[in-house]
Every structure is written in C-alpha cells, then in structure tokens.
Image (cartoon, rainbow, N blue to C red; front, side):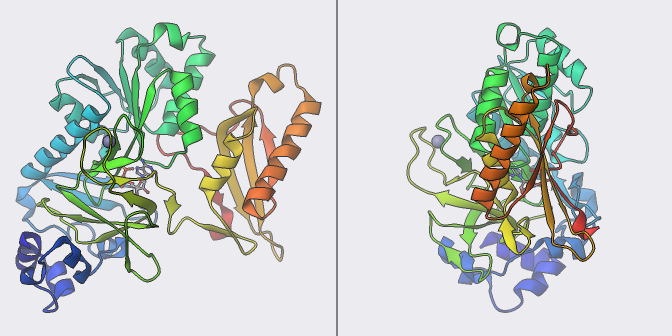
Amino acid sequence: QKLVERLKATSQFYKKKLGDKVGAADIKSLDDLKRLPFTEKGDLRDNYPFGMFTVPLEDVVRIHASSGTTGKPTVGGYTRADVELWTEVMARTVSSAGVTKKDVVHNAYGHGLFTGGMGFHVGADRVGATVIPISGGLTRRQVMLIEDFGATVITCTPSYALVIAEEAMEMGVDIKKRWKLRAGIFGAEPWTEKMRRELENKLNLEAFDIYGLTEVIGPGVAVECSEHNGMHINEDHFLAEIIDPDTGERLPYGSEGELVFTTITKEAMPVIRYRTRDRTILHNEPCKCGRTNVRMEKIMGRTDDMLIVRGVNVFPQLIEKTLLSIEDIEPHYQIVIDRPKDQLDTLEVWVEASPKLFQPIDTRRLDELQKRVAHELAQTLGVSAEVKLMGPKSIQRSEGKARRVVDKREL
Ligand code: ADP
Ligand code: ZN
C-alpha cells in the first residue's frame, strides 16, 4: 500500500502506469498484487538513464549498472537507505554460507559498475570478515593470494571459479593440501548441479548459489542455505511471483514460469512486478534450516534465451547438462550457431576433452568420444549438432560471465 501511494506521488512513470485503475486502497492482501501492472526491461530502457528514479539525484548516493544486451546498460540507483538495505541482505547472504568474522573472503566478483563486487564487499564487511577485494583477472596472482592470505571463502562467477581451479592445477598447486577454502558463493550466471559437483571437487569446498539482478538490487535477492534445496528469497523486501510468460497469469507455488519481483522497501528505484525473464519454480514448504521465506529453484533458463535451430527449440542449459554427464568432457564449451547463405542453420558445440586424451594424443578415444557426444546431444536436443572436441584451454576463458552462445545468425 505504501509503495503504491509513494510511487503515485513521486514517479512520473508509475503515475502513468498505475493511472486511476488501482490505488493503495485496492491492495488488501498479497494476492492483490495481481491487480498491479508489470514493469518490463523495455520500461527501464525507455527511461534511461535516471527516469525510473523516484528521488532527486542528490539523494542518490550510488549508481550501478549491468551490461545491457542491447547497448545501453540497465541502471540501478541507491539512496543511503538502499545501500544499508543492500548491506543487510548481503550480510544475510554470506551468513547463509556460514561466513563470520573469522573468515577471509576472497571476493573475485568484478568491482565497479557491476553490482557483484561491491555487493559482496559490503555484506562480508558487515559480518566482520576479512575481505580481499581482488576483483576479476590476473588469475595467477589470485591463485597465489588465495594461498598466501589463507582465504576460507571465495566469491565469483561459477565459470571464473573453474578458471581459477584450472590455473592452480596447472601451476601444480595441491589445492586439497594447501588451500583453506570451505565455501564458495557463486552466481550471476546460470549453472547446473553437475557444475556444482565439479566446483566442489576441484576447489574442495561447499558451493552456494546466489541470485540477484541490478533492477531489484544486485546480488542479495536470494541465496541457498546449507540444505541446498533452492534459494531463500528475502521476501521482507522483495516479493516474488511466478507467472505464465505468455499470458501473464499468476501461477501457484510449484509451477515453472517467469519470476517477477516487487521491491517493497527500496527508495531510489523501486519496481512493481518487474518481469525478470528468468524461469524457475517457487516452493513454500518449510525448510529444515528454519528460514520461513520462500525458495526459488536454480534458474532454468530465460524466457528469452531459447534458441531455435532448424525450427527446434534448444536450451543452452540442456546442452551443458548433457555435456557434463559425459566422462572425459571438461566444463568448457561454446555453442556456435550459424546460417550459411541459403542453407539450414548449423549448430556446433565446441567442447574441451580431458587433457589426458591429448598427452599423448589418443585419436581413437577422441574419435569415440566425439561420436558419443554427438549422439547424446542429438538424443536430448532433438536436433543434430556438429561436435568439435578441443584440446585443453582452447575455449576462451572468461573473468566474468562466460559467453556460451555465439549466435552468428543475428550478426
Ligand atoms: P548480476 O549478474 O549481478 O546478478 P545482472 O543484472 O547483471 O546482475 O544480471 C542479472 C541476471 O543474471 C539475472 O536476471 C539472471 O538471468 C542472471 N543470474 C544472476 N544470478 C544467477 C544465478 N545464480 N543463476 C542463474 N542466473 C543468474
Ligand atoms: Zn533453508
């Protein structure tokens, strides 16, 4: 009620959007959220850069932004109270992974406009941990400092965590003996349960998934507890709904659909029913950890990242899952789609095979493996893919979000 009241008074955008149709008095229960209109990514783009702010710029103490897929970035503004709120939800987040003042947190999320670095910094700082704001890049140095500073917790994207692990192994570091990492908080991009096992084995730690987005606050929207049965959403600040992405209809707990957020306490840039385009399922059964807030499953993809190859719907997530279920396949891959002139779409999957098949090179086993991967992919995707097995390190590594899909058809 307060949010609707405030937005009608302070936001040109929402004044227009809400119109005379709904007022604060119409919101009598959480269910009445349904009466409010959606906010879309396009609305943020149309109001770039500061048109979604509901306070004067002088009350905004921080601006963050995420790289937009369409050129202009998505902007997030924070008042002093918003920064405090962010600190609070990030303190909860790191606490959920057991972080206390006794921990040394190696924070390799990008520091800067991207919300990851700063978000983790303030949260880990609030619980009193020793924070290393290393940011991304210079991986050999990261490997050295993780050991020298005795990091117990690492925070970065899951793909960069793999890069660090790989570099360490290459440098001959005995991770299990010499590193003290016990928890990793990984997010900002989708990853699978297979990837979790890879990370936990290679880095010898417990991996936690964390979810967030700039439009809502950045990281700190949801995080796993030690049950690892979904990410608890900070519902006292961010109300979550699942909708049918086609009809916009609200779906009950347990159904898969598009995740939608309403920020009830944010000041500078609150959003009503923001459509994330992320697909997941919400669960409200009690959790053994004792937290009572709703849980969201791992992101299953986006309502807008589905690839259509030769008329078949292809989910990149499914390709990853299939690849990682095959022995001797490494978690480094790229999906390349093209449409040669007057020809059908081509789908190529480039993936690295285990280094042991290359030293010395075992062409017979590589051949078999290549056929096996192509067969498995065709079975699960319903469309054939040309598989290219690559040697160690031939797929470009990323320091942030990995670029998994190269769709040349749009270029
Ligand atoms: P950030 O990457 O800091 O979370 P951005 O605003 O740049 O913030 O990107 C947000 C998007 O990143 C989300 O809408 C979602 O698609 C993706 N994302 C963030 N965290 C996760 C996660 N844990 N699992 C899957 N996707 C995620
Ligand atoms: Zn729990």
